[in-house]
Each structure stands twice: as structure tokens, then as C-alpha cells.
Image (cartoon, rainbow, N blue to C red):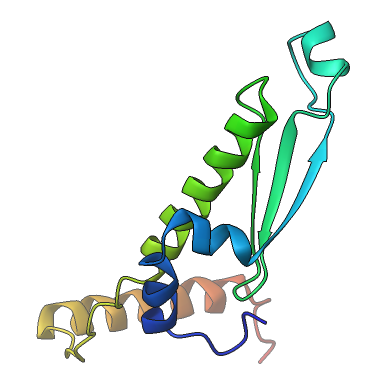
Length: 124
């Protein structure tokens, strides 16, 4: 399913048209919850869509129209595919500065001193 997909795979899916994305989706309509009263409770207008190749699941309950909510779901899936399709930034290893290494070691020394002072006094 979504195991082993690279950013290039997501980018490829993100370039597809909404119709192509819709073909790869499972759609489920359900009663929306929340404010809206009778308009919400009487119709299965909310939509949950799952993109099978990637496993991305989105929900839309913004509109009272099921058709409109389907379109919003497709746009959300495409936006998420494009977001995941951005290649990660290259990370470069850096060395800590002398000052930061000194501060770190000084902090460790201080902490050790605090712990030493908590010990009961040794009987001689």
C-alpha cells in the first residue's frame, strides 16, 4: 500500500488529473456531525475518500452537497500528494562550535555537582 513510496511516487500521483485520482479512490458517504440541524441529519452528504495506492484518507463535510464534498476531497488528496511529493532538504553534518561544546560540558559538570550534593554525607 503506502509502504516504500518515495517523494517521486507521490509527485507522480500529484500530477494526475482529478478524474484519474478519483478512479483510484474508495468513496464512502455518511451523515455529517456538528452544527447544521436538519440539513446535516437528513442526508448522507459528508464524504470520506481513501486513495488506494497511497493510503491517504480525507474527509469533507463543508458543503450540504455530496457532489461538492467529493470534489473537495479530491482536491485535498491532490494537495496532500503534492505536499508529500516535495523532495526532502539535504541535511549536512555540522560540528558543534567550541563555545557550545564548552557550555554543554559545563552544564553536565553542574548537574553532576547537584547530584553529588544530594547524597548523604559519608561517615569517616
